[in-house]
Image 1 (tube, helix red, strand yellow):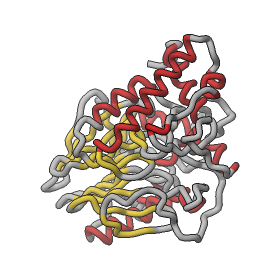
Image 2 (image 1 turned 90 degrees about the vertical axis):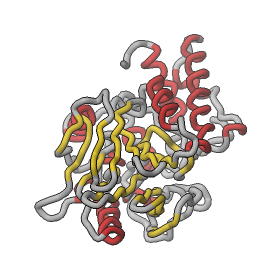
Image 3 (image 1 turned 30 degrees about the vertical axis):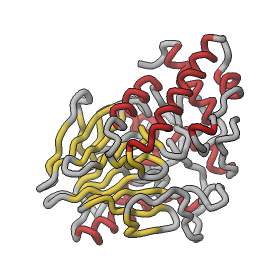
Image 4 (image 1 turned 60 degrees about the vertical axis):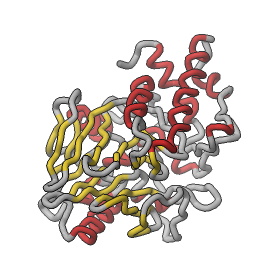
Length: 342
């Protein structure tokens, strides 16, 4: 592995990383203070051992999960959230983005929404099916009721198949699926080829179906502010998890999301950043493609190709949630180049 990337050493988190898009080992919650492992972008309005909430504009807040301790080791408290997300408030609706890995993460965000807006979360938008974004959806439930949970038809099916049915990944049983309590969507985006608008009352957001990190991803655009919730299509400071990726679609989706350099991007993992500051991420995806294609054409296995791969210093430092993530990336490209993915 290249000297510009570092893998976490906690064995417990490695088992579930590739399956969730982040960490999913059976780790106990830590009571220690959260590390500010990623630069702060907005005004911090709340900070917990597992995440912080940053104000990005009137009625818009972004979650930054904090999986790193100051020494670069894994912060086990982070499993409450694991993923980023946020809150978008209009005059009539309060929308939460994603469901965290555990219910306590979603419950924390629901409490923050109530505190900041005076109203409960009315809708939750799920950006994709991975457990670190859907495993905690039950935390939004309010007794016998709860918010609408919005996801694509494909994401709905994948949540069921992956977490309620057969528990496999494209890489097989070596990456066991984490045990979660699946909460299925209550409203489906059935046309995954068009952008749909959602009126929050005095504010409109647009739900853009894409693909690349998984077969079905959703980005959320705020119409009256330069803020985009990109889900796991965009990562910052952490090497992308390709376990369910369709790599060529990933590159195209990222290019669309980073097209306006002034937009504020709430990433799926890592810091919140302006799109113009995430060019290295797009360049890293291009580098992975270049090296994976060359490896495939040379008849190498993904493991052999990954063993020769390193991230140049010019692209910055990219942490690895799992030491096999380079191999996972090369395997995703192998599947696509072999015609095994759409």
